[in-house]
Amino acid sequence: MGEDKLREQLNRNQPLFIGEDTAFRSAVLIPLVQIEEEWHVVFEVRSLRMRKQPGDISFPGGKIDPTDASPEAAAIRETYEELGVNPDSIEILASLSPFITSSSFVVYPFVAILHTYPLDSYNQDEVEEVFTVPLKWLLNCKPYCHLVSIEPRPSSDFPFHKIMNGAEYQWRARAIEEWFFDYEGYTIWGLTARILKYFVERLK
Image (cartoon, rainbow, N blue to C red; front, side, top):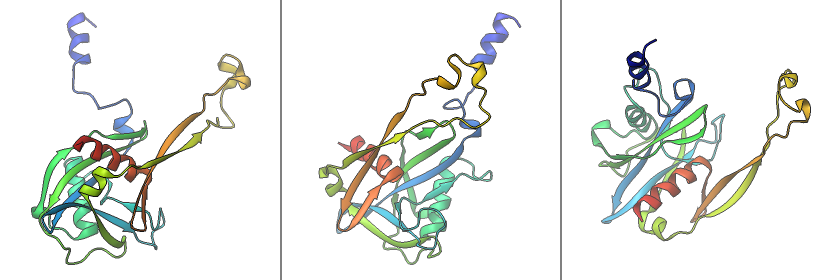
């Protein structure tokens, strides 16, 4: 392979990060609405009947399907399916940096204005309730953080004989930050809180 071909191959369009092509990819919408001339952020409480994370607070969103034209299209589709918001009344303001939890999981966040609010109805199979938090409150809020320790556990068939120190190899543990926002009896935490924190910091 000649130098020109090497250069051509290396400068082709490439994924955002190594592993993006095979990662579980999802998209969320950070919905903004105006209530009494003040901006609010809309949140969902996941249905208590959901198999995964029942009762957790989240933004509308979910897995990017093969039929979605883009992560943005997926976020709009999921918002329509969960909150019943007509896509024509969703105005995308910006895309935020993707949240990469690992090389196998990435979330693409988008900020949008919902021009239809209050909601006529929402999908009660997925959403227990909907509430809003004033943006002004979020800008003045000081979320708090707790650390969760993550320790690697090699599989039983891991080839220790191929690495230095074998079974005595010193795996590096790491800690992840879990942020919390408490608002009028609601606790926003986990992935939603991480994205929310980044969004708020962008506005300050």
